[in-house]
Image (tube, rainbow, N blue to C red; front, side):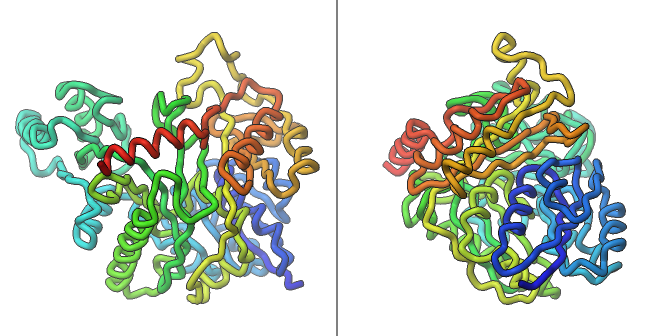
Length: 469
């Protein structure tokens, strides 16, 4: 068995799933060098060398790569921050080690305006209506207010406010969730506008799916559609989070989608990739997951909500454990420019996250249901891991926002641990995931109970029927 070395830049459970996929390789003995945001217990156990870089600074990551250059065959970056800040460019320049993620110039999730302009040029039919507000174009608050209100009239107030780049403002705001009057919307808008360009898009009615594809720069290998549950609470209530869980069906598309919906997604994504890559001189620049598209399926076909330049967290966790191909071989093909397709098992998967009371505002909304989570509260994963005796590979436990301290696994402030269930049907996979989640003891963690639930899926199906009618 060939021995290889891989550098993994890690943040949470997404990268834990990558580490798991590497360690389960049947064709290679993988030695892992992990640059991690914290002392993730899973990663510490699996790594030949593990370093903590809390801010995921690209200079520090590159230094770690340089120190271990002799043992590294390639690197893979999961989190968006180091991708956007040019981790690949720096590591490849200084070490020559091939890195799997897009180059800095093409990590277009760094700019929501850049995304919209690119998609408007290539696939305008998939772009919602939008307008860009650049501070340089307006003299004073009254001028920009007049322009914003005029645009809101055109949208009948059904609008989404997005800062072009991460700012110190209020971030993304949605009509009906964050504001219900023009005055409230404008206040939200100005909190972002004082730091830079803001984009206002039309709010779209439909059902959302996540589209990802592995890419070697020349070829585009689509992965099955997944569904992320972004809202904090059951029945899609509460604020948006990083994702409380996700699912995929045994087929390539989701229960509320038709085969034609999937074909439309593929056609749009393929067109964007082909026309975008044709403009780029470096044929490797888009290596990795350059298009992780959030599609909204509407009565008029799929619309693109946003794009990310990385594997989805949690959505890639639904796919890695059911790859038919060895993940190491997939990575090598991405590096060699030979990745034409990726084989995935015909299995359903459901991922549920357990999170602390502060996450998603749960403790504020339900103060009587949870105890205050103290920092570094121990979490016992042993009963969840023990379920492998019952389910075998049909259950995976992936620590995320956890830290190994004094030989204890402790909960931190974000999505603490994800449990993936695999089954022939979504419901079967969901029951495995829930059993694993309920086996986790210790800190006052909570989770949504309806990730991939029958009633949730049926609601989505009925919604799409109404829209199509």
